[in-house]
Image (cartoon, rainbow, N blue to C red):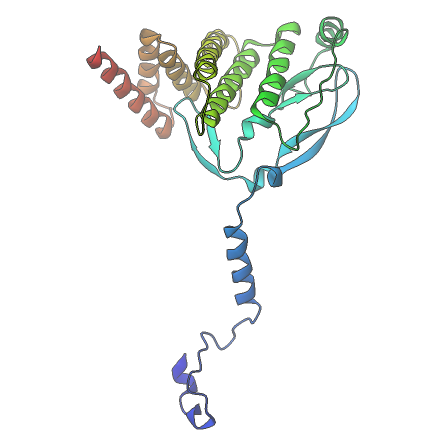
Length: 282
């Protein structure tokens, strides 16, 4: 573009640098602002907002902390499909708890409850429930685990579907793992970490049992997963809790399924290699 302005040296303009004849003078400012915004790391607090809910058990209106999904970026996932985001563990905000009556459920299930289930919750939970408000602007892992345990208790009291119980157990297991990983970034109590490892394994075992029971009885999609994804998840959960034969059985089902998505088959192949390697080590 400099060639267009050749000959202006006589005016003393020897270092003219223009990239575009129709350059938008505000473009550079916007780009600089965008770069500055990228440099500024978003804190967990920046990613949180309050969402309003009406409790289907007691009709109480309240607000619960939620993550601005449009502002979080997925960093990856564990082999059991636990999502990992940059700057925040979104899993901490998935359990909704009514502060008045104690009804709690994962976000996807919160609004769906039958009258007889609500009656059971009022009798067995609400009668003795005392709300303990979270003190901080974000949910700590302890806050999140307590809220998810309330959700799990509610699924049992209302006799919820096996898939809901299993999914809540799975989310709880992921939170125990998240807390453990967070603790291990600094000095930590080995006994506390060991307890979290044991609790996670117990919850994964319950998730496996619940999903296996639901697999043949409930319709798909289940907890947002198709049957091939669920088969893979069952295989990985079985591996993690030491049920190697079950893991191999479900892996085989995924690998021979004609309609299974390629990404799930790839995961199943990786899992098969892990199982083979563990056999060699033994």
